Image 1 (tube, rainbow, N blue to C red):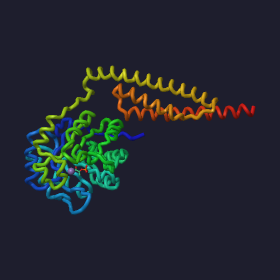
Image 2: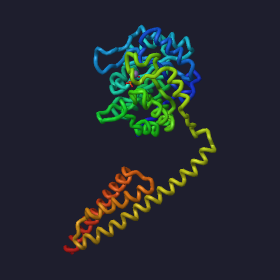
Image 3: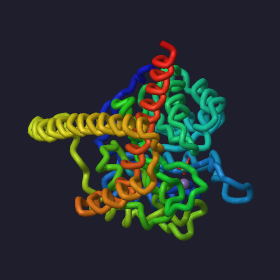
Length: 372
Ligand code: PEP
Ligand code: MN
């Protein structure tokens, strides 16, 4: 059983943050002018934290590896000018010390750092006793325990202003995403730690501007507590992640188009209505399970018959007939082919398991009968 995490809610982090918590700003701080102008244009829209990468983890050397420590002051000044807290990524002790020294308000741990418990521990040791919000991006590989481990380590250093950033998972599968979202992983994190806020990062999930809004909306529909979007005054000329960055204006437009969903926690009417519908689902689920169990009873009767008449368990023609017929019925009932196939394959597997059990059991019984 997992340990509980101690989490300070976003509303108590200290800047009157609202949910959804919105972080935006350039992938990389490139110049004093670029970050100041981006911040100025962004300040026409609602957002909470100005982000900017100072040290960039690049896959290969010789690409832009970040402007380095000098950019911390530019970022902090740009935030001060518009009255917003600023955030940057830290990957080692030096980054932590320099960011803290320059008064960076919020830190995040990048996806390539979360994968490495040594690096995460080193950052946690440097943060011992510092009261600063830390956001942790998911590790690039879909390993929920590793992600949770980083929160536990931060908690042990006394950091409780924590949030997760869901930025998708690296994959070799062909996909329209740069990093596949695998929503089930952050959802499982939410199920296990409902108090831990999750911020979705559509920019690094998508890798292009095309699906940003769709992914951001999905995150809000699921009930994530924030969004992280990269913005740049001149995205096409950006020194890193050019394809996924959007102008402050496009950011503002996207924010207007997104529908935020209310949490039902403080809404007794919605809670009541949902309670009724959930009650119906519970009844239907119980009914489904009863029907399944009845179906398996009949399967066992069939197994007895097959055994007595020396028939094989699997009769391929019958199985094909079932599948075709159920697919046809499913289609009429608006159920996808994929779902029907998965459902009936699972039932078929369970049914073979029951039939083999009956055959074995009766085989043993008849042995006993023979002996007695
Ligand atoms: C970033 O936020 O710019 C970044 C490097 O992200 P990630 O760690 O998700 O790749
Ligand atoms: Mn980036």
